[in-house]
Amino acid sequence: MKKVILTLALAFTGLSTVANPTSVVTDASFGIESEVLTLDPVFKRKGEKLLINFLNADQVMVEIKILDSQDNVIFTERVAGDLIVEKVFDFSKAYNDSYKIVVAYNQNAFEHIVKVQ
View 1 (spheres, rainbow, N blue to C red):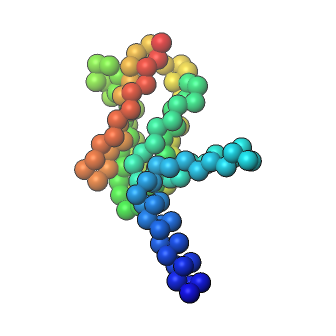
View 2: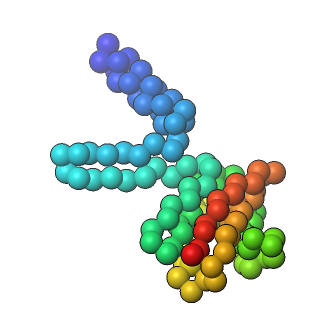
View 3: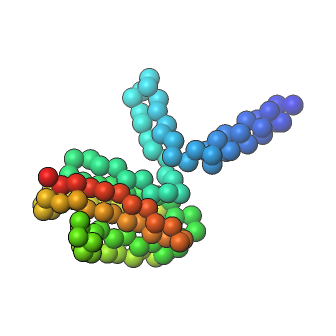
């Protein structure tokens, strides 16, 4: 009976992780916060830096581009076969403008806008 309950508990835990892969695990008693890697890119701004990370479960080619407000390509990179994709972009020396960061893979494109003033 204990094995059945443990198995069901593990199954429900696994399902909740798949259903909400962008969850943040927080333990207030210890002040611990950690982000779970997701299948969709996570864009997080820390000061003048933009952090991008996600789980590339299929290990497919990933293309990352940065475009300015005139759609000029400022940066482009292709990452092949990495299971975990992590990039940090420093905008501290960028000109005042709106920049579009595009992460594309598996016929999907994810965009994030960074405004530098």
